[in-house]
Image (cartoon, rainbow, N blue to C red; front, top):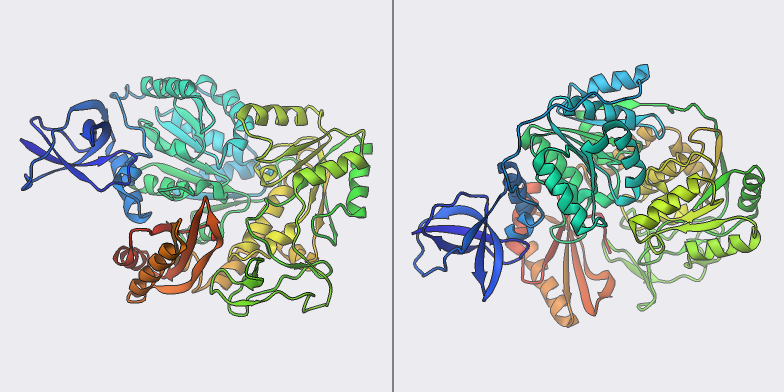
Length: 614
């Protein structure tokens, strides 16, 4: 009798031992019985016979995880502090032997400019690289040439996008180039369509997948290229277990599977810029493919409809052009901002803003837990402090009253809930049937709005002054992405409402210089120079959550990691559960992970490389 260590797919349970009279290879998917229920499991390894009786594996299911999938799944389990069952559960195994590679026919590609051609030739020499290209500089055309080169060699290609809001336009462009070789993959696609796509992949009819982060786990045979578009986007990070980052896993897959990986963005992350500039594997693509003129207008304000803004909207509508109006995504907690100078109240010990906690009647730092009373007036200029934030619904309603003849629609997650609705809204906007589009971060997601003459950006100071070490990076990146949405093919303008005009002007000119400044400020404190982790504790009994937090804290204090802060979570209660957290830092991933493993308790939920601190 053979004995094997198994992981139940999708389960947080520990590994289990089962027996089998037949030999089974590691990576095979099998069916087993667990607590009177049938479960799918993956065979991890053969082991010596244990001292206890084991249930037998019922049957192999004819599917198996490839060696590369197994390597990545084990990494996810170790690095992101998840079970092997959860990690393997991310992947779709191979169910058949892939057909022999078949060369794709030549694609009708557009010719590249001399600078685009230089970028292409540079990227073709690198196993992994960053294409740092300004908005509108023609990155997609370079991607197309890279894809065509790999398809012509019989390879498969994965084109990652941060979320489905990008897929309609990108799908159309990729289909124009590569026809039926292309398929989409994301959460909104029906089960039937997903099955058809998997069958197409298995038969070799589909060789180019364009999709969100989950497409990284598809059984793509002979994968030659992964493109991670808009690599700066936070949507690549999963907020559920396992809390992986698809961008980082793509680079891991490239390194361990001999796959070329290209990251692309107009506003790359500071960490990405540092990594690839150090490796001399970055190409800076400056300028716009369509040489248009763009004017920047700054006006004081937060998220209200100010007279200068209304004047610019009126001018735009009279010229028969379109405008997009941006407000930041509503935060889960609030900050006090001055209505006159736009300053927030800063923590004296951390370079972040204090957050308002009405229940405690206090301002609290979410990093070191510094606490102070809520002031009635701005300590800098004596003006009124504001916490209320207008949303897209209120702004759209006010604009409808002010411009009754204009067609005004919203573009946010409350309204754009399906792929069909997303597609229809973008189509109506590009057909000129919508005059003003009011939205949140979705507006900045790489869409081509050919008739947009004005991009109005409201409430950027909320991003700029948020209590996050990446606040400046997020704000400047969002600004530049939104600036790129106007004047794509004709001249356009950008209006920015902010009390920090000088700061923003200095940093909008050259994003690369801004990244260098950010890296200087982060030296020794934040990524890429250190590793961060958040540990969460949640329970319906607040005393149990607090006790678990305290016990883990005491164990962590005996390890080499630095404890930045601990205490009640910024959002103290979610879904009837009370929450506590510990924020830790280390210069070494190895030290961080080993310390967390030693300190981990029953309630610990660990987020490595966190992007959310609430």
